[in-house]
Image (cartoon, rainbow, N blue to C red; front, side, top):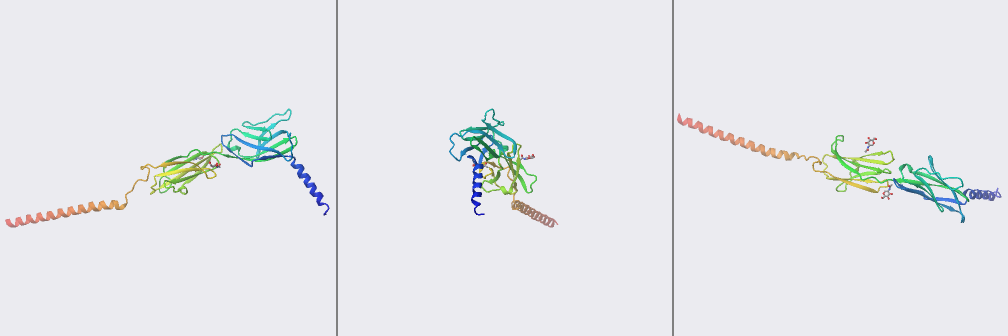
Length: 281
Ligand SMILES: *[C@@H]1O[C@H](CO)[C@@H](O)[C@H](O)[C@H]1NC(C)=O
Ligand SMILES: *[C@@H]1O[C@H](CO)[C@@H](O)[C@H](O)[C@H]1NC(C)=O
């Protein structure tokens, strides 16, 4: 048994060395592209030995999970490039790239780069992440008829972002009200997100300004828009009960006092009349 071990080890070394060839493709693990802008997935062809006159003959980019996607740069005699519209493969010395002219959410994913050279072949993968900045939110106030004890709701809408972000609400004292709000998330056809938040204003709330803030997927603030409530938009001012009772009491006692005075006057004049009669008789 012991005598076979070195042979076994040798076989493994040979196989690994052979499979590896002298070529390696090295890419960034993740590249971030922005929607509507150009993205470039770039890899280096490296050699495990000194090969001064390495010739790259074929570069093929494929997308995992998308059998349709294939962009080919072919330098072999009698062959031609096959680029999909909006995608191009470039080769500059030992740098190979896939150029995406107008990046969209659908381009997100894992790409495989296959490289063929006169000294061997190699392939590797790279991950494209896509981001899009949210548009400035639009904030408005509406009459509230559904939520109980609310007289108005503030609404905030931010569109055109990716990946899914967040909307948060603050009052003028920087107090957060997000927990009272309801967030709705929609995805548009192009994969971008629409965030929609409704914050009901309860009876008795007296803040005059709220701010809607949109955050991107990594929690960075992207934009904020304040809304100032006009005094007519604030809850209609209701007088407390004591403020109503006090005038009633004052007016009431005045009336009672007047009536009393009237009664006394009448009694007196009646008595005088009676005494006049008495004298005449
Ligand atoms: C979300 O999508 C639904 C259905 O398509 C639509 O009725 C609703 O208005 C959308 N919401 C927003 C905030 O755009
Ligand atoms: C969020 O915004 C920060 C700062 O602008 C940026 O560095 C980051 O890449 C953004 N993240 C996403 C997922 O958009």
